[in-house]
Image (tube, rainbow, N blue to C red; front, side, top):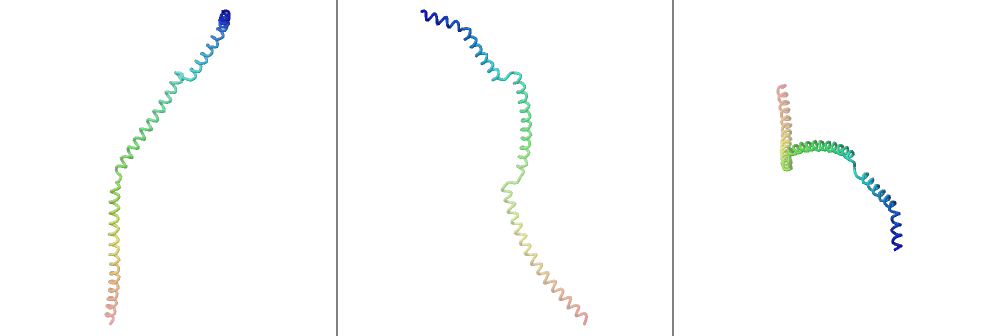
Length: 132
């Protein structure tokens, strides 16, 4: 039993050192926990900054939502693809009609030129007839 008694006596002599080291480890652990988590004051100021930022972003989102709404209204008033196709067909018909009119005008110009030539010849004939 003497070895057990000497072991117990040896442990009793180390108890204050072990208790001090344990308290040091627990203190260090608590210090690290304090540094790891946010204090209430810091959290309050941080929360206020975040709330202000969220309010600004909310206002920006509301403005963007209004702009998107206005653009959607404008886009709903735009012509559809079918309407563009009908417009394109109408323009092609109009272009064809204009080509026909151009041909007719060219024909009228030729007729007018020959009529002018005829009038000039009649005028020359009348002038010569009046001189005799």
